[in-house]
Length: 85
Image (cartoon, rainbow, N blue to C red; front, side, top):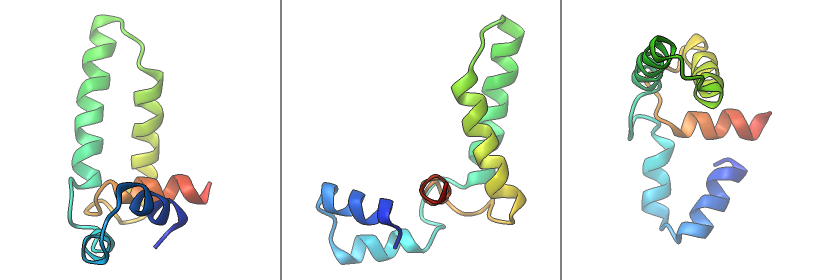
């Protein structure tokens, strides 16, 4: 469990069973699906002339996760990536 996971668990009052489920990485919305949706949002924003710099940054983070072969991992992979940077 990463430091971020441990802090979130402490804050949220999660029990051990729920934390173990989070370690599975397939529990939530897959990173490759999130990246697909972010790219749809970025394309529509570009068509409308609306800059979304934070969304673009998050899409790049998900790109790093997916390029490492972890596209099926859920959004906890993003927390791990950010904790390591």
